[in-house]
Amino acid sequence: MKKGFIAAVITCLGLYANCFGQDIVQTKQYPKSFFRYPLDLPPSTAGSFGELRPNHFHSGLDFKTNGRTGYPVHAAYDGYISRLRVQFGGFGNAIYITHPNGYTTVYGHIERFSAELEQIVRNEQYQQQSFEVDFNLLPFQARVCKDDVIAWSGNAGASAGPHLHFEIRDTETEQTINPQLFGLTIPDRVPPTLGTICIYHLAGGPFSEKTPRQFMAVTGSAGHYRLTKPQVIYASGQTGFGIVATDVNSTSSNHNGIYSIELKLDGTTVYAFAAERFAFDQTHAINAYIDYPVFLSSHRFIQKCFLLPGSKISLYPLSVSRGVINFNDDAVHELEYVVKDIAGNTSSLKLKVKSSPAKTLLAPASTNTTVFHYDRQNEFSNDQVKVVVPAGNLYDDLSFTYATLPEKPGAFSAVHRIHNRFTPINDSYELWIKPDNRIGNYTDKAVIVNTEGVCQGGTYDEGYIKASARTFGDYYIKLDTVPPVIHPLNIKNGSNMARLQRITLKIGDNLSGVKSYAGKIDGKWVLMDWDYKTKLLSYKFDKNTTPGKHIFDLTVTDNKNNISQFTAYFFK
Ligand SMILES: [Zn+2]
View 1 (tube, rainbow, N blue to C red):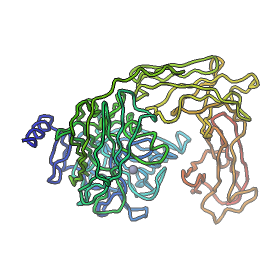
View 2 (tube, rainbow, N blue to C red; view 1 turned 90 degrees about the vertical axis):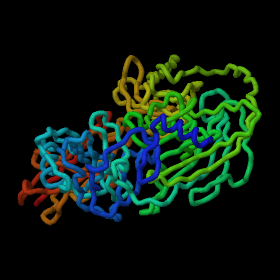
View 3 (cartoon, rainbow, N blue to C red; view 1 turned 45 degrees about the vertical axis):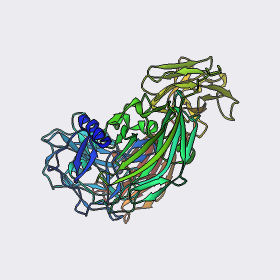
């Protein structure tokens, strides 16, 4: 009887679809016959779609490549190369193919483009005189057929090891979609692993680092889990729940993300999360999904099973009252977690909750705070500082706090405590700090830094240094008057480089960061690769450097326009 009722609720929402013969939560169907795996290797993943990463949900599948680079990467389907990108960090080198079926595939961290694409990229780099390029191609410029080799797999950019990052995006909205929903399945017979449960006693207030939490250990295996210590949980008034859950598949021992989490109250689903699709401008809403204060303090990912009101990411196909449960009777309720991987393997956990009516809440004592509302622009200012948080940047209401701390040595302002780091920002906010008089003529060298040493940049505007900051915390003004460093590794005046393939140097900057660099041989701009992991800058000799004497020079500029130069003549 009860089961029939649940089925009715779910069917009318149209949430369940059959994938691999098992039901999984899904809002839409995707074509399964178009795309091939981009590698010839047996499919195995080091990272799943929607997996939890610091500050973002993982946007694709990470295919394993046996810990090596250099495997051919194939076009997953017919189409045309619509975008090519070379980036210092991020995907390093990336290819985008737009297909006639409404989807775009993305291939990241590749080591080398195909010869044809390599030429297109190189031309663009020489034309823009920039190593980093990101440009679109027209449909007739580089057509590809399914199976064509477009690149060789690599470890470029900000990757933790050799693999191929692969995405399928909706071409029109650019939302990224779980590639496994397109039939690119990974063998998996292992159900998710469940860890700690957390109970949040919200009591009608916004979620914050101060929300009372109760952690409970979980034990079990093979899909069946229970609390380690059998116990009844007591709850009264508005209550939220969270869980630690990961998944391994049959091809690797990597702990990847789960696909869906459902929370049921007395047999009825009150909350569901599913890693189906999302928009990139919402990916930081992972910080609204996880218990962000706990993540900052202990690096644990607790997945909250209630939504914060300002979170707009499309990963929640169902929620009743945002998943916040209001316990207000004297009954014992049954709570059930149903956690699935994308193959439909299921783990579940049941809890008993003894409910009691919420006590009348006393109005909170007034403190020195300003209330910020998640659904509008918020501002705070005094005679030294201005904070402007544009609408859409807070996930919940906030009792904003501010304090001034003593000035640090070498600083050009006091330290301003802008609330605290435990409240996440979706994108950024404006932070204006007034420099003290000693700054004199150096306003164009001023930057805002936080007490962890992270530079936020800064420009002078109406008597303030203004920066765009991504986190709350403690901020002050510093000057960057120090030019970047250049360490030549294999070149000095008179070097004989006849037998060497490359000129290699190491560059860096102490505060505002390297903005640009330009290497020249005999006065002509040359392409220099800047490696994200080694921070090495290198020029690979080509046929243009003929035998004989040449002059190499390099100019490196930081974000405050401090400039360093290096010049040496050499023989080839
Ligand atoms: Zn990836």
